[in-house]
Image (tube, rainbow, N blue to C red; front, top):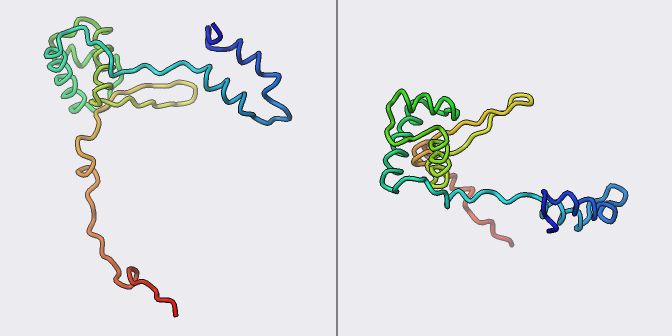
Length: 151
């Protein structure tokens, strides 16, 4: 296949014809776009348990994130064990459920980069964005809304 192994061969094949005098042509942009891997469709993740049980586990994990704020995966596993979340078989199963919860728009993944190291944290999405940012009363200037008439 052309795109096996990340598309590096295709990139080398088109490199000679793609860049002249440090200009990026459409050919090189196409190669760059086609050589990337597809993102995982998190909506189609199978939680490996019945749906009712997956929702029960996810609600207890959601409450855990609400209480303790953004947590990394190891810290989430420790907090879930302390809280006694039932239904989690292993840390791998918890990671699968966290990915399933991201697909259901219950959690978001935050990347915190310090230097060359990255830390990933899961946190809850705001339930109602209007409650997070209260709207201040806005006074309208009547003169600003008047239309100027041309003579």
